[in-house]
Length: 400
Image 1 (cartoon, rainbow, N blue to C red):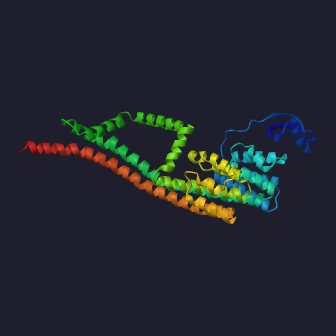
Image 2: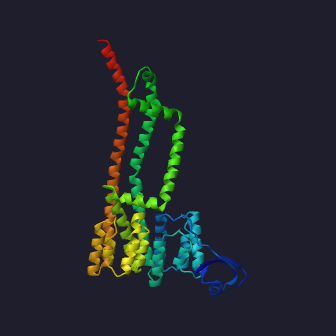
């Protein structure tokens, strides 16, 4: 179906504008006539490819409010109107919800109206609502989505807060090194200038100190250029593919990354399967939530195997990068006919494992930063003391 931006008039002759999906302009005219609107002009709307996604916690609030209102017997249009009138909404969110409301009022389904907003709403949520509209379970699905995105946001916040201390350590490390290299080391330059020869480590240290003191702006320029180059490189699909592959192949950290990716996939798969979506649709949508190009690239084969008649467990077992716990749970679910329950159970356990994995990665990161800082400070101390100690030794030998 094509999305049209139309200009019409109501029975009172007042102009009405909006967007509506239809097969063609004749279909659009018929749809508007059902709403007592008479079409004057229409233009096709190019579907948005760019846009800003709604944050997970805001998506959760939208779904939660929608579920509560529909559960209280409020109509969908009125529920959306109440959500739009929420004073806590940012203006961009209010405009987005009002646009959805306009589409729903013209007869478009909620899922279609959400899909017309480009990338604003998650594809998983749109598909879940589409299935719920067909089965009449919009209230339950909205509450389920609220819980799902609340958990996703909590995990994101936990990762962010866990990284606060390592970030502080990193900033302190830069500050300490800048003070030592920019102020402390230059105090010894006059002393070192009187010496005939200096150790290699001391010459390196003085070179770095002189560079930071006189050409510090180049360091900023180089840093910005390096950041842009790395950003552009990682935007190349092949480079990103290999980077994501390395992430799950690294010792220790790779194992923890696998747990996080498996937890993310299993929760999405469980939510979609419980909503009654076809298994192929479930896997296709869940694949896009993993966040690792190497893992996602393997799902073309998974989908082909399932279409060819293979069990879900056998197809998932071939994916390099998932933990065995997910496959084991799917096997039990297929054998006992309780796949939905086993997916939920696996998702709950893997989410707990992922939280522990995040804590483990942060626990490893903190001592690594401290070790790097200790190594750098130790190098500076040795580089400064070594020539001084050598000069004292030379004076002592000449006095004999």
